[in-house]
Length: 219
Image 1: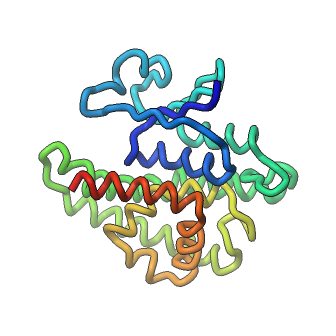
Image 2 (image 1 turned 90 degrees about the vertical axis):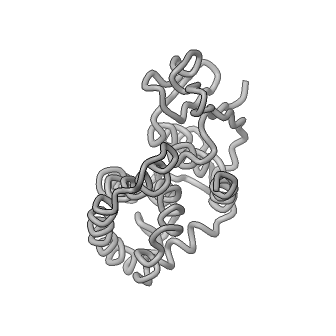
């Protein structure tokens, strides 16, 4: 039985896993979960992800949830002579991948996700985006991206001169950020060059094209 990825087409966490799969050229079946009907909170999905969220990955008898754990599993299992998204053969380089994956999870994500939520999710439930929340997190994200600008002035990618999970983990939310607040990226030349590089990779473009199609269809 091949890999099955259960998720939602516009989901940032689902897209994070897709990016890793596509970058490594791993064949998989994407199984959409219908949030509108509450499928994510019902059996059998609740047995795949006990928190009723997406994504979940099935690989034979193994079932995983939490997108960043899934991408690590994929990177370990499917690394090849060309692509090692965790740099497992080099302790120092691998440690830098770990550092910037942690930065994405604990610095970047907490600032960018409320912006996404207010602009894209709140209106789906009939609400009005809270501009104060957006402004507060834009300010936070601006300071974080100043750190990124400094880092990327010294290396092509976040962990060094090689693509890694540290870069791919940023793809989904940055895609949406470029719709809502592109100046945060475009005003920083090294961040801008980095984003243009990773977002133009065939694997990443396939994922973001799918996200864009869903976003446009929902307008």
